[in-house]
Amino acid sequence: MSSPRHTPLQIADADPRTCTHDVRVRALARTPLFADLDERALIDVDARCGMRSVDAGEAIYRAGQPAERLYVIAQGAAKTTRTTQDRRELLSEILAPGDDVGVLPALGETHYPDSAWAIVPTCLLTLTNANLDDVLRRHSSVARAGLTVVSTRLRDSQATAHRLAAATTEQRLATALLLLADRLGVRRAGGTLVNAPISRDDLADLAGCAPETASRLLARLARDGIVETGRRWVRITDRERLEAHAPDH
Image 1: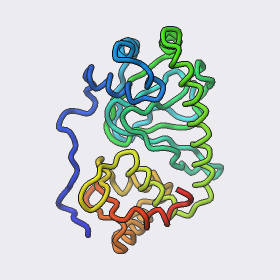
Image 2: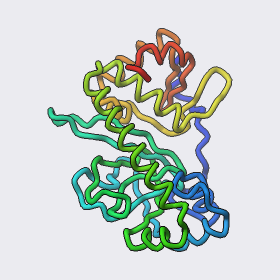
Image 3: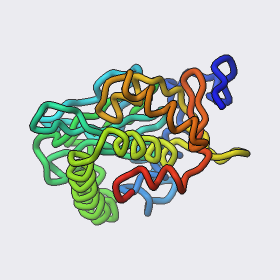
Image 4: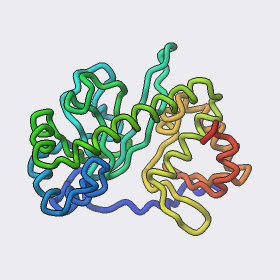
């Protein structure tokens, strides 16, 4: 059932672009690169990070640009996309607080292989190549984790892009909804709420289709009892049936 006038979202009143010290350290502690560090080491890493605020829909970086910074999401959410041969932007990954995004020469890449975009207003921690080199020298566990993180991300994003390139629009939309639920979802009575303001245009961008197509397919999923939607929100009410619409999720 759709409820356009009511929103179940619980977004913090504080400006999500305001990154306090505690918020930054908690985000770093959830980042695979820094997962083995103790609090003192995390504070040391934080001291070497810059900060950047981006608005919803703003590019964090674009594919092909020189890889100058590694980013960690402290607050907010982002997505990465890859461009197909027919110039479509297809979703690669949904990113939440604690996820790192981007590459640096120190991690084996000189240019960004994908594009990254903020889904909602987002606060990012940034590490330049020089600062990351300094972190790697000080904390050997980060270097070991970096090799695993980079290889895993590239393999997974390439597999996702390849799978979605051959998928139907309905399959891409289902995959986008599942990724949103996995990365930004909170369990509530009746299903999993994507706890971020998501418009039809956002879903269309994530699925690589026209907004009208996304609205039509989302309405069909709602009629079938698979999702509930309202103004800029969506809840997955039957995950098993939604997975049946996605290609090998």
